[in-house]
Length: 118
Image 1 (cartoon, helix red, strand yellow):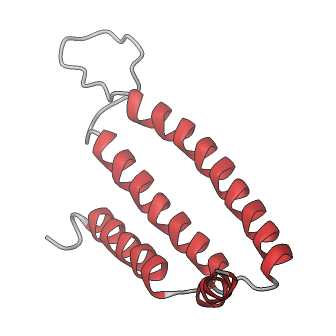
Image 2 (cartoon, one colour):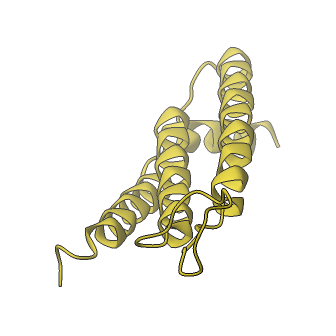
Image 3 (cartoon, helix red, strand yellow):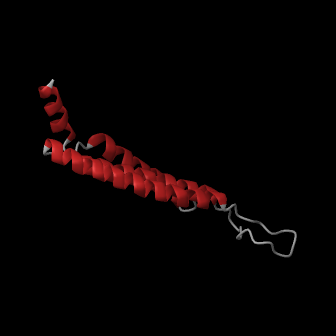
């Protein structure tokens, strides 16, 4: 049973690694990497759900017993990948600005500096 649904296990492992990285690290770059892993896991899960075993591309074919796969999940994931890359680029640009302003990308140091300024 494990080998039949290996893609779900990969999804869970990637999701947990990404979530753990976001929650446990104070380095902003490592948090961005964790978010990217988390996002990749969601993409994998969504693509896995869109695949039908024995399904073919939705091109009209002769015969009554033809099973078609729905292309919509794959199209939505392509859009999500583009949005994810743009979001990651924006996050990295913000991290560069934070580094210029505070001189560090460690979350704990930034919070301590903000508390000292108040």
